[in-house]
Image (cartoon, rainbow, N blue to C red; front, side, top):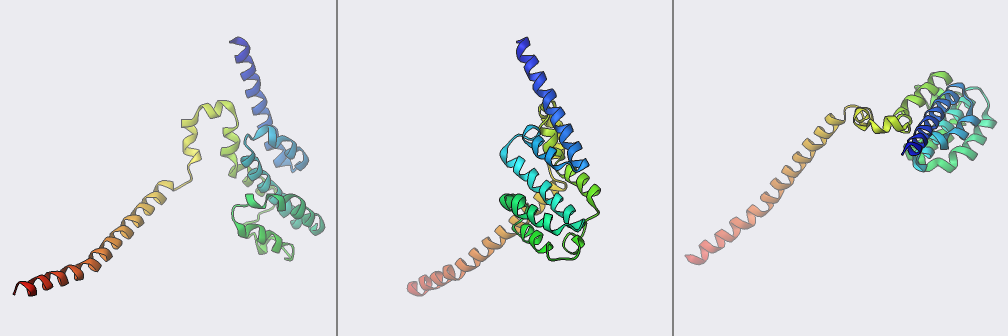
Length: 195
């Protein structure tokens, strides 16, 4: 039992170290180091690909912002294209392609504030993922539940429920109005037959 506890403790320490090093690599713009650390710091192939897409996108934008169109094109074709399916929306990859023809990153990415701010934003966007990779944080699932849920999720669910109720009530009214004329017509026919 003691050996198993030591192994788990060592694994937890390695995971924490990998996550810390990954954060530092992103903040420093050390992209080769970041690529090496992603498999150690993030579990799950899907999560790794999503993080890599976001990191490669950031690197692409930094290259364009620095005036290095040729390197940016290489980044787009060699790194981002294989992960195109991990883009948040189908239009985003097309926007990145279009960005190669623009004079400034700001023409497509309106909220671009530079490399340092974008790196911090990348880490903030993936903070939940990085926190969950740490074993002691994963055990505290209840504490992280608030962070995992998107902001205003309850409001969004309530609006969705209200829309569904309105739509189902509308369908009931349409069905009842459609069946009402046929019922009165059959009642009239029955009354005429009785007379």
